[in-house]
Structure formats: structure tokens, C-alpha cells
Length: 65
Image (cartoon, rainbow, N blue to C red):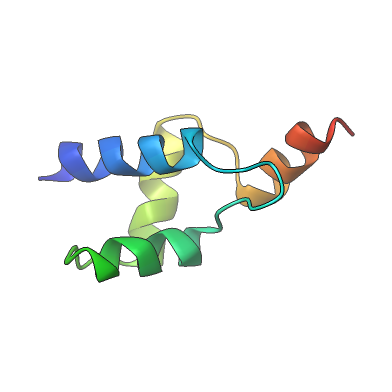
């Protein structure tokens, strides 16, 4: 379900390494490998709805810039 996918995306982002920030494309690849068929735009929409910054913004935040 959509809620389960959102939970997986949130979990992936919370567990990412500061030197290995996941892009929306990379999240799509990881989910596809697990059998979840999802578009990058959908990942971006879910991420924004959960108020999670983009990979560029997260990289900046985790770098402390």
C-alpha cells in the first residue's frame, strides 16, 4: 500500500549515511529491487508530503554547511 511505501522511504532516508545520501532515483532503484514498482515522481511526491528535504538539501544539512 501507499502508506507502507512511505514508511519504507522514510526508513531508508533516516538510515542513510552522511556520505551516501539517497537520491529519489536511487530510492526508486532500491524499491524496484524489492519488487515495488514506483515512479521517481511518486517518490518525490511522498518525500515532499512527509516534509523530507531533497537529497541536495539533506547533503548540505548533514555536511553542516
